[in-house]
Figure 1 (spheres, helix red, strand yellow):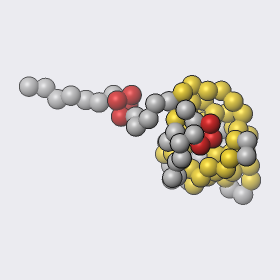
Figure 2 (cartoon, helix red, strand yellow):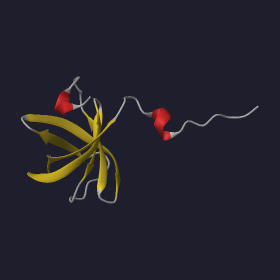
Figure 3 (cartoon, helix red, strand yellow):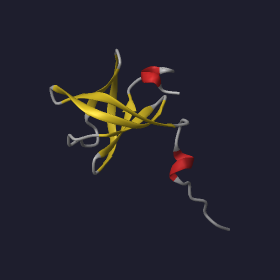
Length: 94
C-alpha cells in the first residue's frame, strides 16, 4: 500500500497557456514594466525587475485591463500572481 503524491501540474486549478508579451505591474506607487510568461484565467507568471514578496497586492495591467492580483510565489526574477476575483477572459487569459 503506497501513498500517491500529486505533482505541481496535478495541483493546478486551470489550464495555462505559454505567452510572451510586455505588460505592466502596478506596485509600490508606480507602474513597472514586466513580461508575462504563462497565463490562465486564474493568474499569470511574470518576469519582473522589482522585488516582490508573497502576499503583496498588485495590479496586472495589459491593454486597458487593470486586474487586481496577489503575489503567491516568487523565485529570482519571476513571480506567480493570482487574480483576485478573476473573470473569464480577463487580461486575455485563455
